[in-house]
Image (cartoon, rainbow, N blue to C red; front, side):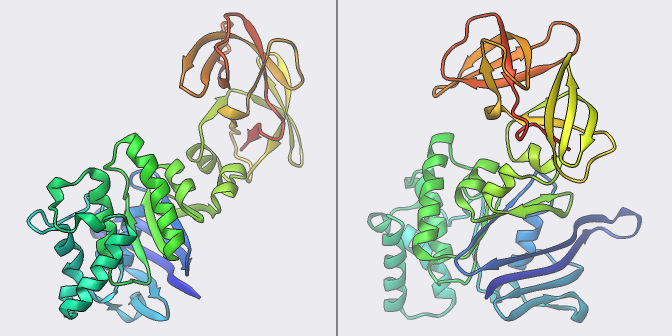
Length: 356
């Protein structure tokens, strides 16, 4: 059964000539024990969708149901207030009370629900222990690290066992190293506790690491949805392909097409490629940076380019190759070793060279 169901949701700001359409008929579901990431660029509508589910924004039309309970129905002009939806919320800013201890921050929602003192103590201590915060109950937020503050915000959202937890950019306030650790912790916690979670992020690596399914939003609509692996390996649109990975975009010209097989002309070379999507009026050709194979000798389905520079990234070098004949071809590729200056053949496997 779905823990959350959104059907044909429309949401506007303003009115008349100044109306701004934010959500344009979004439908989605979240199953029990599933983590769904709302991914997309700024202004795509992902945070607005999350806030509409939470009851913090008022849609115009459509429906929202939590389990079997309708919480919004535009046709009946019905909207259940946020405080009655029983959802767990983790904000980007954490929004912890600075004058309350960790224990009291987590207990706040339970006190509002008029639970007994002993029950509150048991529930709070249990969730703090689950999140590795058992020894920090008497500290104040300013005495905690960023990662610990984030865990307190998650504990506060989980303490009353909500059917769905909503996470709005939960890791964006952490530095890069802590973000990677928190990503692993959050995924482990979600799996261990069997949570149903809806998470907003603009970071595709974060979405792929944490979620079971990704909904990619573009201009108020769902561009594509699927597992992280399917979104990365089989994008259906150019927008999805470019948002989900690091790519080379090549100024290739289509010379022949037969089904999904495409023949390209690029810098004097003839290449075989694979068609993806419906096919645009002006085709675009891309290949993931990690799919380019570097060779010092001629190979099939390759172009020859001089090396411009190599950048050391720790676990690999990222090498930039650029044409000098005015054809404006530049290709990035990964190498385990720093390359010497000179000409190289860059193999572009036909199944990974995509034409949209």
